[in-house]
Length: 282
Ligand SMILES: [Zn+2]
Image (cartoon, rainbow, N blue to C red; front, top):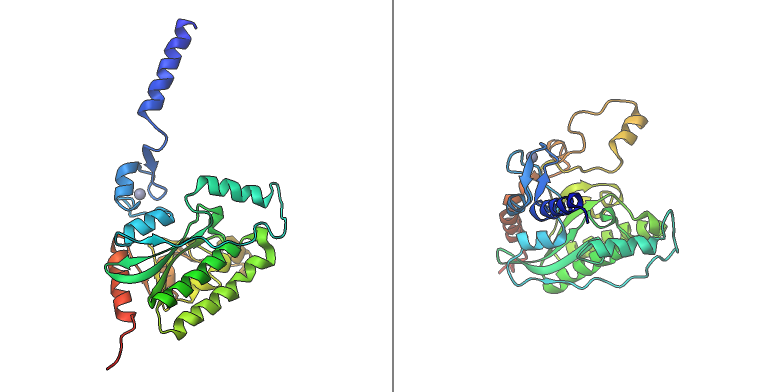
């Protein structure tokens, strides 16, 4: 090895050791370089511009639930029922997504409590195939709603999705009425169903369970809509207003009940569950 490559190697090692890829995070909101640890300690919200970063199920559970919660087992559903492939096999896409994520599909539920109020908490994770709704998501939703009924508590779901999982075709669309029936059962049991819309919630998820809550909360800046902005613009041939399909716009137009900063979510959810829980009337 020449002296030059020796120096290069040692420089290479130095670089690797001192600047791991995830030490800094660039805020997508303001472009500021943030120390990743500080960003995460701040609930993955930018301290400078309050941009709310996308987070997964495990972080949500840890941020919101009291200690001692239990993650519900993922339902077993047929995989790749249409034997679908585009540029890759759907089963290979699933395998890759599972290798890159903590949980086996895009919706994960846990049974626990928020400030002492018992709840089933569901979190849809955009990092898992765009949070897309297929059979596994639909089945997890139904099982969570049934568990809430069995436990006599509310169901709170955090939505994040690009829409239906195209690789499951009509079977993914069938999850929309299925989830709707589960919500109806919760209502019949007199139990609250609360939706927290997070960035981004779009497509078939917005067309079903994301918009059927007793109360709709949204995180600041979240993109919430059915069709994309460009599609709408091209259809109606009109320029859309600033902030269209953002949480604040939907709140101003009556589609969302409140926009809540991530640091206030825990307290807000605990209060709402308290107001809505079943009380025996003497
Ligand atoms: Zn920022």
